[in-house]
Amino acid sequence: MAPDPHSPATVPPHLVLVGMMGAGKTSIGRRVAKRLHRRHVDLDKAIERAAGTTVPEIFAAEGEAGFRAREHAVLVELLGSDVPLVISTGGGAVLRDDNRAVMRARGTVVWLRATPATLLVRVGDGSGRPLLAGDPLGNLTRLAAERADAYRDVAHEIIDVDRLSFDTVTERVTRLVTASTTSATSAQQGEP
Ligand code: S3P
Image 1 (cartoon, protein in one colour):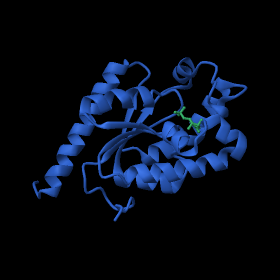
Image 2 (tube, rainbow, N blue to C red; image 1 turned 45 degrees about the vertical axis):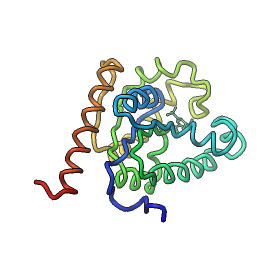
Image 3 (tube, rainbow, N blue to C red; image 1 turned 90 degrees about the horizontal axis):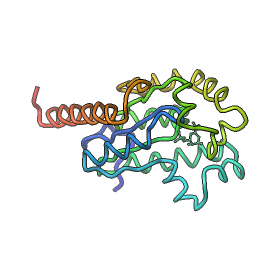
């Protein structure tokens, strides 16, 4: 039987990276996965594989609501995996209450927090990201403010990445995962 994605983690939990577009979720996820010898899954790429088309095309054909429904389905499926994964989510995956609940239940959730100025450097002109079209900085600033409570609500840990190199962030995230995996294993074995 498939594991219930809403049940508390009984395996070392997945690592789930959340944060705004341009926060570095994909780059950091890839690096951390390599360090931990885990599979890395980029949620947007998994959605594209399942849909057989690109994120911008999904937005164009089905609107944001269609994209969010696909995002939810793929996220729940990934979090149901028995094999601990490193999952880099898309910036808006935290918007649904049920997404946040299943992320926390099945993963260690780390928010890579960055200011809009840092995000803008990383996303450039915003191409490939429909929600940034027209005014990348204005849209990043607005979305970051609208979503701050959702990120805070879902995150087990927060890392302010503005002044940190990718290597440093990778190191910090890796340590967090190692620590949480060790304590989960001790708890399962009844150790204090
Ligand atoms: C979105 C972020 C994107 C992608 C989609 C919507 C968002 O992912 O899921 O364009 O709502 O913030 P990245 O955060 O990986 O750019």
